[in-house]
Image 1 (cartoon, rainbow, N blue to C red):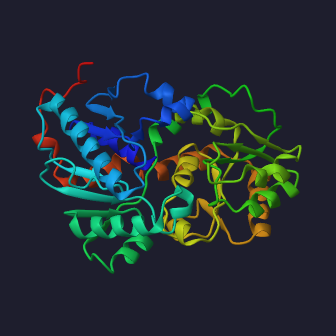
Image 2: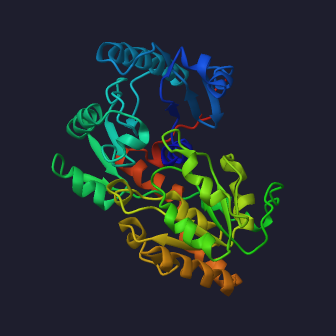
Image 3: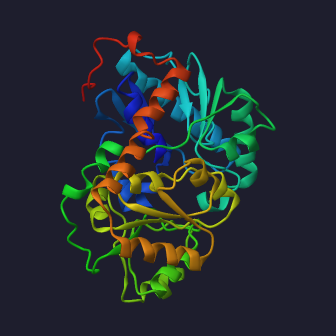
Length: 374
């Protein structure tokens, strides 16, 4: 996720506390994955100058009264976690969700980092649109600084706030530069060349585009989990084809291995309000791996201003572009151009811009920044 990448890079300048979405104390009883997470300390170091807090709160936070209690519990846990660096006030509180945490800890300034059109994505996130609208409006009014990941999102929010900074998503260009030397994945059985989609399978995806690619007999690899709001039965027709394979969710550290076997990366998002306001991570990640990319005609893709991404508007155009790029192969020069472009859009560059906005200047960094003790 974009906010996780930024936390890692901002921690190179200042100590950062990453706060997970709150978990009800009942959730581990229903979810084995959450139960495994909570076997670790709720506050734990994950990198130099980066602490991760997983707060556990009362159940039923969809109710206003219980939500206020949960917010107080998260705020108390966050303030306690800051004690590892001398306690609050923090230099800045950056909120990258609609949760009511903008004033959770004493701070010099507050930042609302808008990663999505939350109202348009209410169904995707399984949240109520009324509550989301209230929280989004409150954040836009109250935050000292507002950052949006796209021009479309900034224009939409400009009805409530004019001074919005646009900083698109970036990519981990350093990690994906090693794609061609990464270990080959053991579970991919498709013959090459391969077109691939890496990401969560959800209602953002236009499945007609993937069906059009499979109709050509192209090897199609799907890498990623499935959203809880997405009916997996919708994939049955696609996955029944011998040229299609879904390997499920993989850890981010494994992505170079899967991108190694992919020749053309796909960003098959439908034309929706949520997608138009988004800044897809995967498009830049494909380029950072040196792969060709076919994407649908979204503002964020056009905003990249490069012909290194092939834009398609219809299923036929999408499949034609994929087939053409697969047949054309790739040269060392093309790989270098794609990686060079992605490097100019790295998370390090994005973190530098955000760091300047919130006052994280290198010349003011303490000398004793180090990994907190367990």
